[in-house]
Image 1 (spheres, rainbow, N blue to C red):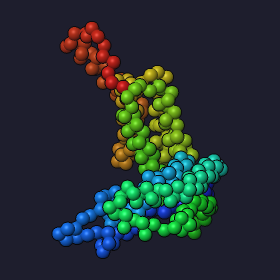
Image 2: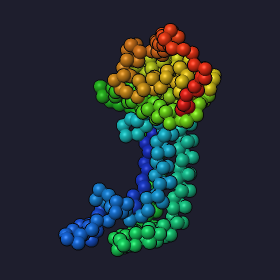
Image 3: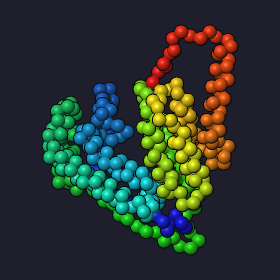
Length: 305
């Protein structure tokens, strides 16, 4: 119950016009000997795009921005986001900023509405007949957009409280998704990264685990390992040949897999053991190379991530 008493439920109510309509077999899809399907950019999975998707992207991105603001210090819960009470003011401030940005993007969208409509018809002139008369007027489209959020305090009935294990699993699952994104970014890097910068990228994960732990042993165990990993990162330039690269990547990979994450939770895997294991491997590898191969005259710097 500490989780319920210490959090506020943020409920996002966002609505965006899709710019699509259900395709009609009579007018949109011509079958038979001379039949022809519209291209995928116009017809996909039985839906026809009557407005250019690129014009809607800025508004759809605001939904993702609002979700990121909630997930930074909260977790998905009951169709909304549970945010710790002492972080709710910061989340509300971020959502207000996103809302203002959404309203500004909506105004720009409406200003360009007629031009985008005509450009889409011109771009798809062969299929203008399935577009022109299907686009609603600007006022109707404007009313199809909405950005609101509500705050609630929950009071479950006795005997029907949420399962704290399930809540912890959800939080750790979200952390795992963030770890996968971070590991992908590291692998895609072409240059070395400073230890300070690498350490800072772990800060949001540490903050979220700390904020939502509420004394839960599973979360606290993972939080402890994240802190140990962060503290082990040296203040030097790190390329893919640096031992720290393998250490961070291995840990992030463990956290991004629900089954492997259990090894961290139950103590079978730890950052300390990981560091010791890498040192042992490096020492043994170095000894083996020294005894079997001559020392090269030029040291390869390797690739950068």
